[in-house]
Length: 164
Image (cartoon, rainbow, N blue to C red; front, side, top):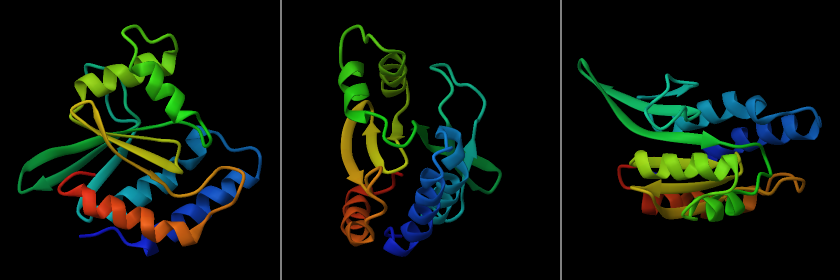
């Protein structure tokens, strides 16, 4: 099912309200992201703070069940709103990353076949370690930009296939 801009409006409103308090942290936004993920993937379960996997502890695991079988659809690693995702990704591309975040992203990209890396406003999607897409829904400090939501979600839906 294609992503709908209507799914993003309540999400971005929640993120913006929390951000404007000036007291929010990376963890403040997790409930909103969990709800968004589950609304975009009906029948899926987004588990916040799942058990560790061999490469570390991604913030979410997205699963789906069919009968008695549960399948992993992908993982999500979230950083605080406004985090320098480009810089972290650039560091993760080095042979030896120099930052904790760069080392973490390198491990996740090498080990997790389907990963979304986000600051809650920008989403970077990787499959088998390769970035496939970037979607920017809004910018920190500038409020939400609902006019840009539809174009971003349509791009994600068009590129998504069976992935998150």
